Each structure stands twice: as C-alpha cells, then as structure tokens.
Length: 103
Image (tube, rainbow, N blue to C red; front, side, top):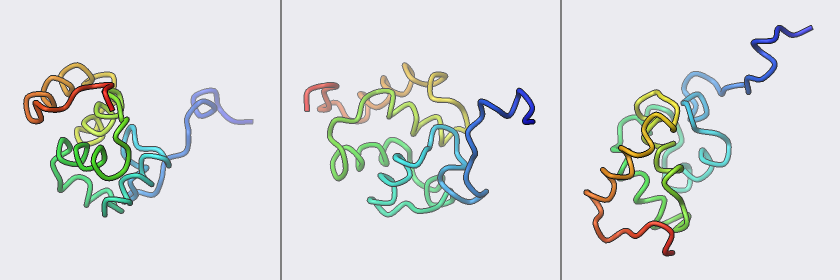
C-alpha cells in the first residue's frame, strides 16, 4: 500500500528533464521542445520572459497569464501561483504591445 503522502503526487521526470521542474508537465515540455528547449539546463539558461514570448509567437498565441506564471515559477523553482501577479506585470512592462486574451 502506498503512503498517503505519495498518493496525490505525480511522478516527476528525470533530474535533467524539463518535467523535473515545478509547473512543467508533458504538454508544456512538448511546447518548449518546439522552440528548441529540450533539457532543464537549456531552460534555466534562458530568460523566462523571452521563452514565454517565443512560445506565444511560435507555438500558441492563446497562452494565458497562468501559463506565464508557470514558466516564471519553473525558472525560480516555485509553484506558479506564487508568482502569477508579479510575472504578468513584468511581462507587460517588457512587452507593452501584448494584450491578454485578445488573440
């Protein structure tokens, strides 16, 4: 029988894989691979706001603020909800032409 603490945890990827980062599941890892990011190290070497902008332009123009927070959180090693408002404000400062939900 599994312990209660392990039952609700999803398995994480290998240590160097994208899915070993918080907030990065299979779907996000697949999206990141479409822009040439295949490993945790490659992800961490890049600016997360630039990564998100590239995902918007090349993969999915409908990505939301929660997706942005997921990318930022992964780069900081924290869950997305801890950075959601801060990350959206910073993205708008860096990319003032972006309008949320207007794609």
